[in-house]
Length: 121
Image (cartoon, rainbow, N blue to C red; front, side, top):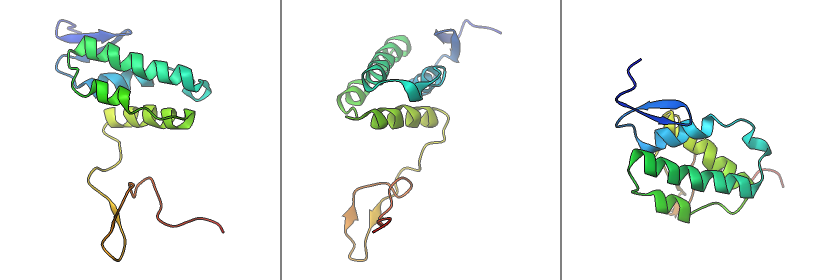
C-alpha cells in the first residue's frame, strides 16, 4: 500500500485531502469502552482530538467553535462523540429538517432526535 499520499494518526492511515471530521471520527471510533469514561475524560478526549486533527490535517476552520460549544453533561459528550463518528461515516441525521406546529411556528429541535409529543402522564 502506497503511504506517500496518506496522513497517519495513531496508526490509522487516511488519504491526503481527507476532511477533518472523517479523521476525527476515525480517531474516536478506534477508542474502546467510551461508555465507561467520565465527563472530564470525554471532554479532554474531544478537545485534544480536535486540536490534534487540526494540526495534522492543517484545517482549523470551525475547530474553535466545536470546542467552545461543548455539552455540559456526560451523556451530552457521549452523544457528541458518537454523532461525530456517525457523521464521519456519512450516517448522521439528515440536515435541513425542522419542527413546526399547525400555526407555522418554528420549534427548536431535530425531528429525527426529538419528539414533539410528551410520553407518559
